[in-house]
Length: 90
Image 1 (cartoon, rainbow, N blue to C red):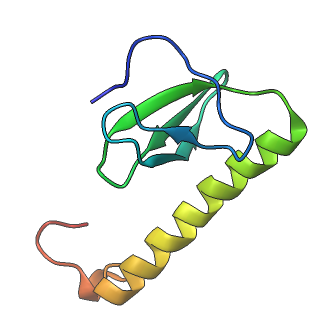
Image 2 (spheres, helix red, strand yellow):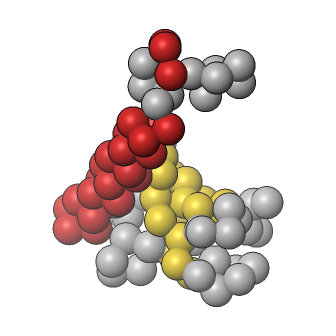
């Protein structure tokens, strides 16, 4: 579910507040002029790229942390190697 159609501005910590549930939304993808975010309840939002070096670094950090978290999850589930994958090919 997309929150509104207009791009929103990020907070100083590089997050947004979810318009549906109020939980913090964290960046998971960065494009040319926008950032895609998601909360723990899987609501999605889009924000404009801030253009401020400090916030840009925070956004990059959130994205890197998400990648690291997904990597650890895949290691635990055994989906990083072909042998451990199930029929869903996660």
